[in-house]
Length: 398
Image 1 (cartoon, rainbow, N blue to C red):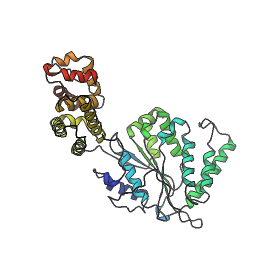
Image 2 (cartoon, one colour):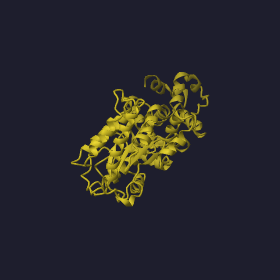
Image 3 (cartoon, rainbow, N blue to C red):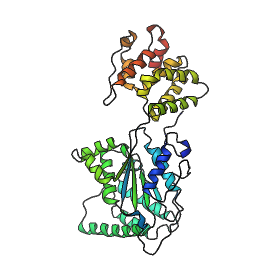
Image 4 (cartoon, helix red, strand yellow):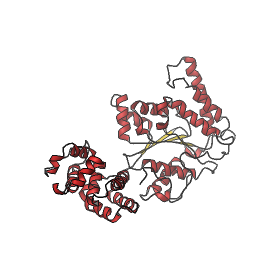
């Protein structure tokens, strides 16, 4: 079966993402001179880099110009490869960690901490742990991170209204931390993935963290999300002005399109060839070829959909080995990629047994070709009433 996980190394890239990662890394840190195809065993959550060279109160690499906090977004729909691209960017930057002015990396996945209700405190706890994991990594930066982080601590993790004294204490702590970060010769690149999995309130709190609390010099945030999801969440928080709010926070965006049908089909064919020997790979491949044009090419727009389909076919074959490969592929495509129609068939099979297929309900936002694609699957999955005993056992036992 195919795991639904991002790629970890450049050698796994077959869609040209590594070359894009090298270009993005060069923007995030000019010292990143990795070459496409170079693998790195270290990833987003790797151990900290070596001790940086610290001068006497110099203000970082002057060639970088603005030493303030920067935010870059990697935006794309579900299955477009956002997490894979972020991992490859981190690999390129990680290769520079032994360089005196190379970047330091921190992976902070807010989805893992949001349910605790203390996103701000958890972020600074991670930053403090990162700063203290190296030998004298940043001089006084460890204590300054801790001082600034605990200024926000409450038992519930929620930030209450602050008194004037508390606000002054926070400002002093932030000033100390900012000075330490300005004096560092190395940038900190913070990766935040799975933002579009957060609730509306959690998304709002995360962007408040990035904009208001963790807006620190020499820190770059790489935010990975589906912009449509994030904007809808921010719209509900800011009276329909979510996009304007987001644009005030993000300085640059890398938009990832979905891979083209030829690239998806090429990967789908590879997944089929990796199925276990008990499955007739040739028959499955032939069935997919027969259903591809105008049908599966519409319903399988991403590599994630391709993996879901292949895994479903593999499990379906194990449970229903008597069903011919052509019909099984159509059935599993229907169940996996058009579940609403599949449920309709199970609820009212008589309509389909008579061959008078009702027009499938097209989901909001789906292309007009969706209806014809599903109709094609139905006509393949349910060819004649006289040969459906094994198919119906699939519907009611599978």
